[in-house]
Length: 235
Picture 1 (cartoon, rainbow, N blue to C red):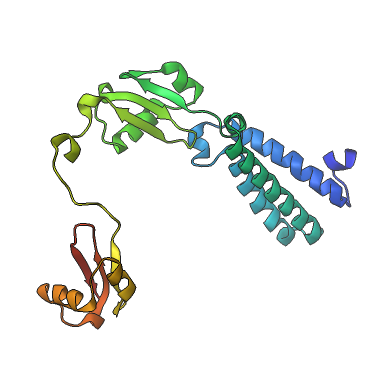
Picture 2 (picture 1 turned 135 degrees about the horizontal axis):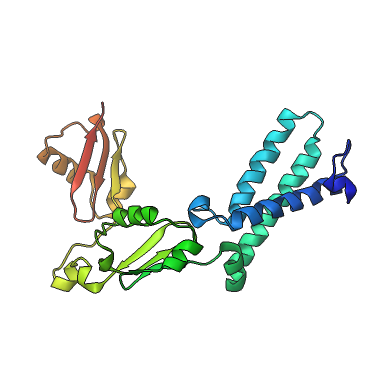
């Protein structure tokens, strides 16, 4: 135990593994209780994983006395630990609460929860900044604002301030879908054309309507869910 905690000339392989766990635990405890905004999108154990991996991989480059075998064993130990924690977090909600923490309600029914703001060390300026990002001009518009475990604020507006949708107005709209690439770098993607029920002749005719006669001059051509074609010429 003394060799693990104190400075020694030669550290055994088991000592390296023990130190890996101890340093990981210290880093996890430090990062787990950081304000959510500090850790960003990473959970405490993710933060620990990245920091330790970076340090371990670089360590042999700066100290020739460090054994590559010990470094590799430590990296494998950290990876397996991270994998097990991630797996248990998916399988157990209770364990996930411990590892990821829990969200905090910052605003409910247009009122700010001061105690939760203090507990999360989340300043008003940062709250207002994130509200502006989702186009909220007045806190009274908010039904609930939640500080998520990834450090972002999720906002649910009151019904009166929600935007009107085509469903509300009973307006039929074309089915939305991701753009499909029809031509890439001057080459027609026949498979994509067939998947939407068209052929090369139809594509040529549509491009001619837009003044394009040479397919090889096109860098990219896509079609959206509404059937509109976008093209970009080679430069």
